[in-house]
Image (cartoon, rainbow, N blue to C red):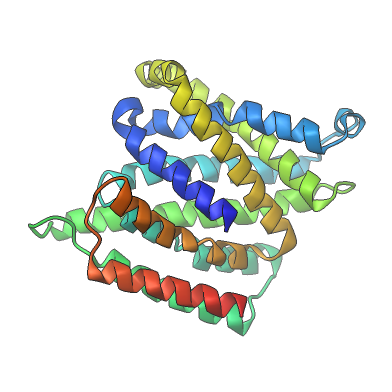
Length: 289
């Protein structure tokens, strides 16, 4: 719940900073400015001798790389999707990750959700379909425009679902560490790689956006601290229960995002969006009961 709250806050800042930093720049600040807080948490949590003797296995590095790329794609795609629908609806569409995570868990981990989880996910998916059917603006957009915005939201959900499962696999390839140490070690190493990859891309292809990120260090520092703590909390949750249940509980972010939509962005929230939010709350009650 805390991770979902933090991620809503970070996503809101990303939406607000899109116009200033660009889509790629607003995605990059979560990694670049999240690097130092992640490393500080790592040093506070994991014993230094343990870190110095750590030699990552090839299987760990492979899944970490795949998961990190998926998380970067999620962050960028989410930025593009936010430019096409309101904040709450975009977050809702990206939250199909719970269903997609359940599928990937079955394929890669042979973990099968029980009836309670399946029922909760089913209610959540219907809620997302209700929210995703909302049309923005006074004039109805063409079906191509609607398909594009919905596809981007669903693609963001796919990337998030896939990378969550891959991060879980990577953490399981860390023997000798408890679940808290695995969470911070995995998130820190992922942030290092993501900073290097996205930083190199911006340096070569989007130097103006990179300069904007470096100038806007106050906003970036806030995003980085929130992103580092939020990612760490998600990973701890992945170490305690199956990914699909964690991602299903994370759908409370949709409810949080509609509050942000009304309060911060002054965007209109429709009846269907309120109905969908109520269904999300019901699905979480089912999951936790």
